[in-house]
Every structure is written in C-alpha cells, then in structure tokens.
Length: 111
Image (tube, rainbow, N blue to C red; front, side, top):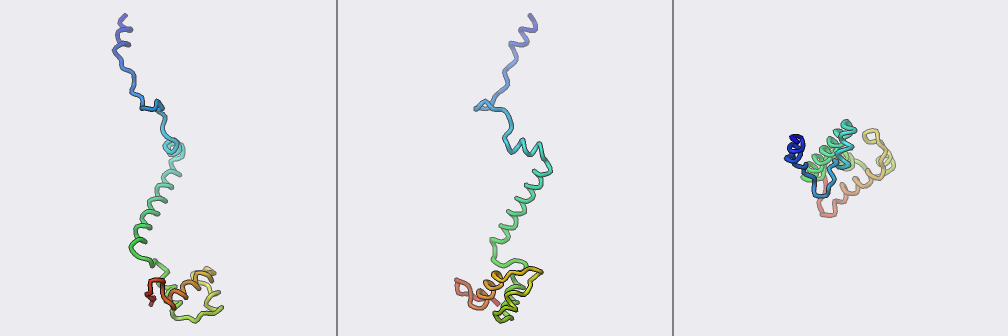
C-alpha cells in the first residue's frame, strides 16, 4: 500500500508539445560524429568571418598583384596564358585586364 501511495504522488514527466522527446536529426548526427560536427562548425564560422571581411571591400589578397600585373602588361597570349601563382587562368586574367584597363561598370579604374 505504501508503494501505491508513492507511485500516485509521482508526476508524469513533461513531454514536448508534439510528444516527440528524441533529439533532432542534426543533434543525433553531432553526437554520433563529433569530429565532423566540429569541422562543419569551424568551416561555417570561417565562411561567415570571410564574408563579413569581404563585405567591407572588393579586393582581397592576390587581387592587388593581379591588378598591378594587368596594368603593366599588354593583352596577348603571353599575358593570358602565363601562370599566376602556378595557376593557368586565361579567363580570369582577361577579366582582370579588361577591368583594370577599361574600368569597372561604376566608372572607376584600378591602379
């Protein structure tokens, strides 16, 4: 009888409104694979940080070197197919040359 009285005084655990008390899919994945979860968090944080920095301007790291090289060069196969930082990028070099020599759509020129 004492056991019945003790059971009757216990309250039922509070359930979430939808009745599902399991953790979400992302939480289950993070618990099952914490190393990848930390890696994803670090990648997202780095992406957000770079986006915030890039939002303050439009030139970054090697853009200054690309613009200076375009300013000093003539447009031709030697310029377009030359390696920059061990990368073959004729389209990017052409675009950089055009923007540097002719200006941007806003009317400002570089260098």
